[in-house]
Amino acid sequence: MSEQDFIRCYEEYADPLFRHCYLRVFERERARELVQETFTRTWQYVRSGKEVENMRAFLYRVLNNLIVDEARRAKATSLDALQEEGFEPAIDDRDRIARTIEGKALRTLLDRMDRRHRQVLILRYVDDFAPQEIASITGETANAISVRLHRAVRTLRALAQDHG
Image 1 (cartoon, rainbow, N blue to C red):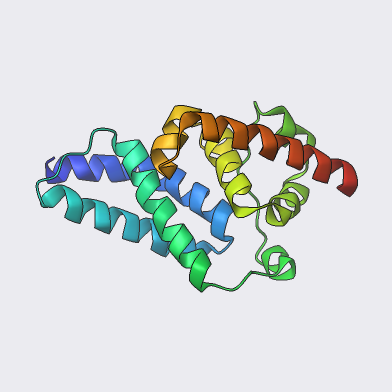
Image 2 (image 1 turned 30 degrees about the horizontal axis):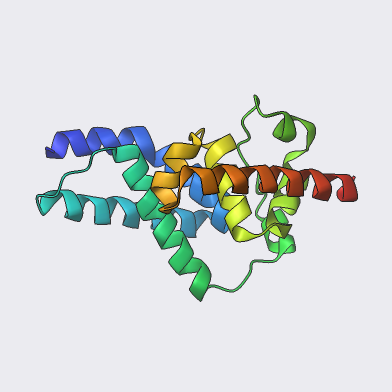
């Protein structure tokens, strides 16, 4: 991959990666840093002569690994701090769950969910990945992802009913 190709890749994927990361870590500056680190590591990987079959999935997998590492080290962010920052998630209008819940309420519900459920919901309904692509990103089977998606949607519905 040439440097120009990589720059085009950055221009195409930086914003969606940032949105995805921000919905997972809830800190703008940290999300920017993690996305930058994602591209740095990907560039190093590509420059070492290794092939990347699906660049989009590869970038999300690198970012996912960085987020998991971050979660292991970081303490939980309080909801009050998020509201002070004016967090407004980008929600896919086609998703009927996201259409029925206000942005702040959705953030609150996502924050109450298990990390793995939150991850697959964001990858599927915000980033528009198919279950097979999510499996590639997470290193799990497509069947496991489909089951987790089903459970995550069910959990989100239950939380929404309790919340509203």
